[in-house]
Every structure is written in C-alpha cells, then in structure tokens.
Length: 177
Image 1: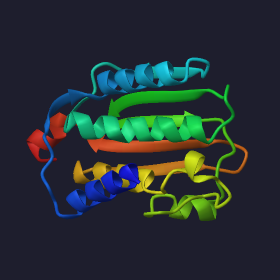
Image 2 (image 1 turned 90 degrees about the horizontal axis):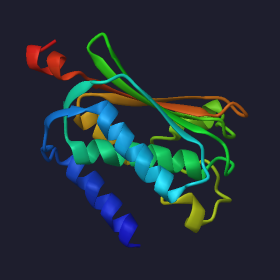
Image 3 (image 1 turned 120 degrees about the vertical axis):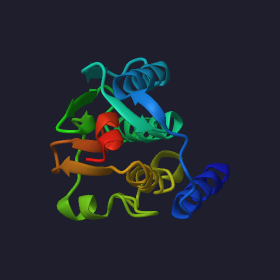
Image 4 (image 1 turned 180 degrees about the vertical axis):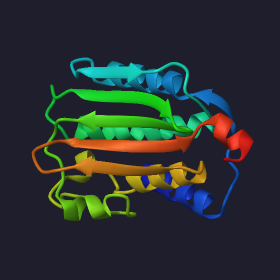
C-alpha cells in the first residue's frame, strides 16, 4: 500500500509540473549504477551494459535512476530467471538514448499500445506480489516527458521487449535546438 501511495504522489507531482532538480549528468554513469544495483538484487541474472562515454544530458539524476530501475526491474520480473537483460546507452543527433532490452515473452501490439497507461497490467492473472501496481511504466513515461524526452517500446510475442528512453543531450538543451 505504501508503494502505491508513493507512486500516486509521484504522478500527482509530475502532473502539477513540479520542477526537476536538473544538472549535467552522464547517462552512461547512471546506467552503470542501475545495472550494478540490479546485479546485487539478481546475482544469477545476466545483466550487461553497453555504453558510450560520456552521454551528457541536463536532467534530474534521481528521476533518471527511477526510470532505469523501473525498466530493469520490469525486465527481470517478467522474463525467465536466467534470461539476459541488456542496457545500452548512446548519444547521436542531439539525443541521448537508453535502451533496456530483454529476451522474454514480449507483448502483443495491443498490450504495447497500452503499456504506459496508468494501472495497465499486461497479465491480469499475475499476483500483486509479482505484478506490481501498473504504475511503474506510466511514471517512467511521465518522467521522460518531464525531461523533454519520451519512452517507447519495441516488442513482439516471443521476441522480448526493448524500451527506448530518449532525452535531449545537454548541448541541445543549452543551444535551444
């Protein structure tokens, strides 16, 4: 119940336009921290990081970690225990991109179309202990939008899922492009 309340408060804060604590941060460094934390929780899970260094964005470090932690947790929670999860970071064309990809069961086009909606859960049969509240991806999408970016998913049944978070590079924000 506490997690649900915290998630709802986060969404309300984002809805009200509460400012983020922005500074220059390296997406590769944040991704490395998130992957390392996930390895502690899931020591038998193959978790890989592929990152260019540096990929600098003007963002709220804590909120970016929240996005990454959520995406990695979803990948580890909804895939077989030894299925690899790959986190990659790159910067090109004024955009920094983080991709969290897995080889799990994937989603149908219908599920993918709704996956960022509040309280949406792809499988009603999942228990609350395993399935969560259905707010994590909605929060991730709201946080990405608050940073001037977006989040999308590429997925097909049986082919896994790849969540793409795109944020403007710091140089793009500073130059106004």
